[in-house]
Image 1 (cartoon, helix red, strand yellow):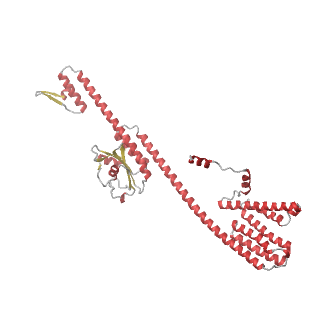
Image 2 (cartoon, helix red, strand yellow; image 1 turned 180 degrees about the vertical axis):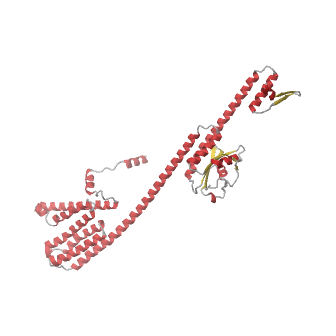
Image 3 (tube, one colour; image 1 turned 120 degrees about the vertical axis):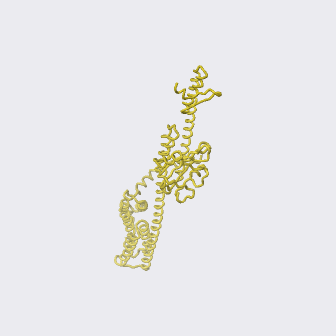
Amino acid sequence: MFNSIFRTKVSQPVRTSHLGKFWNLLTEANASITDFGERRSARLAASFLLVIAAFDLIGGFARAARMGLIVGFSGPIGISLIPLLLAYGLVKTKWYRAGIFIFALGFNSLAYVSMILEGRQANFGNLIFIYIPLGLILVSALVSAWATFLLLGLNVCALWITTSFVISYQPDGLVVLIGLMSTTGLVLIVLSNFQKSLEQSRLDELKQINKELDSARIDLEQRVAARTKDLATVAEVGTATATILESKQLLQEVVNLTKERFNLYHSHIYLLDETGENLVLTAGAGEPGRIMVAKGHSIPMDREQSLVARAARDRKGVTVNDVTQAPDFLPNPLLPETRSELAVPMIVGSRVIGVFDIQSEQIGRFTDADVNVQTTLAAQLAASIQNVRTYEQSKAQAELESLVNTISQKIQRTTTVEDTLQTAIREIGLALGASRVSANIGASIRYDSDEAKNN
């Protein structure tokens, strides 16, 4: 129940109000800005400028309510709206950094405009610390250290020019103010560099993680595709051999298709003999397989130096991905290029009937996924072998019963004991494929199938 509730909550789309959509429209970065960090900075700058504009408008209308519209928007409030609108227009383009710098420069200039308007009555310290730090902070956070250094230099020059030449008045502590302003700017530059370095480090780390995730995703997709292809090949082999009702033809078709479809060096099939002591090679791909089958190649079940025998004994797949390093690998002079081998038992019910063995010329060719795929193929093959054996036994039994019935009918048509014996001997000889069959009754009567054949 909790899982269903969780899934329901996750699947619900996030709803955005009309006000939220309008705000997103106002603060959305320009489409030409594609970097995530750049878009975030541009969006933050637009949001900041809109908030400042809102405060300016609120202040202007508040003053206008008391002193009139013209007076309300005169002075620093009205002056600040000009660079504010210009800056916002630039922030909505790809030159958003220039917009931020223009706003900071215009905002800082309000301090010097106030000094000029108020003259010697101005509170220089308050004006400096009201207007200057905000511009420096904004530029250091959203533009660059060099832009912060430039803005700091412009402020120092503007303060010196304003006090020395415009109002011709240097207040007490001017040097201290310049020193504090410079110190503030330099600290912001250092912090800005540190922050950007930290963000870049995190960004590089995220890029590395994303790269590893992409690599893992691609690897997983490739493995899934390979596994799907292998399972499709298993189904194809099963379909191709489903109509084969002769055991040797079935096994030969399986090894040939397996070698071709899985791009293997070799494949062959061993069947357990009636004694259960030896694994006899019954089918093999290509000329090496034909030669080994013709020689009656077999492997004892108790042989230690054999992957095939070990797979049958352990009743599970055995993989060796570098046969040159495997002590129990049994080399075959007909297959000199074998470098990795996979042997899986063929099991019907609880009984092992053989081993399906495949080989590759590549080191490290087989994985756990290959073991699962070939185990599935071996299980299908074992079932097919059992079905073919049952069919062959049923067919042989039917043929035997038909032969006995035919001989019985022929014997029943005879009229004498001699004809009965002669017919029985002749038909048995034909059924056995014998060139001569004879029977002796008593001490003197002899019946020969050659005489019957001549009649």
